[in-house]
Amino acid sequence: MPNGSAELRYLYHEVIEEAQHSLMFQEFVNRTGLDVDGLPAFARAYLRRNVPKLGLVRRHLLRLRTPLILGNMARLMMQPPAQIVREYAIPKSALREAYRGNAVFARARCEALGKTRALCAELGLIRAPYTLVWRGFGILRS
Image (tube, rainbow, N blue to C red; front, side, top):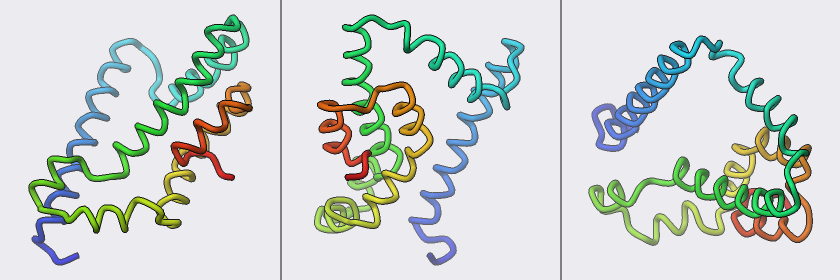
């Protein structure tokens, strides 16, 4: 990517914006007195403790909604937003080639959610018939 290109400026802007979000979140966590390094462990422990206590309806909703949320998050994180597509006039054919039916992208999307998916499997959230939703969003290997 050439230095000073629009693509490089965009990527640099996105990195700075994400770092700012991380700093704001870290400030919030620091004010609560929690250790940021321990936050992922806290979330995992919380889910491991509380998901098994859910009733049938709430567990069904969690099994259904989790792949919807994760699938949409993966799309938002890994594909350019509509504003960028318009601003840089990215052809729809290029987007289709890069993201739809692209085995490399599909593998990367699936791998990006590996740890979260493993936790969901451990919690019993990935099972038939919900696996159809996970596969529909391309976040579960066949």
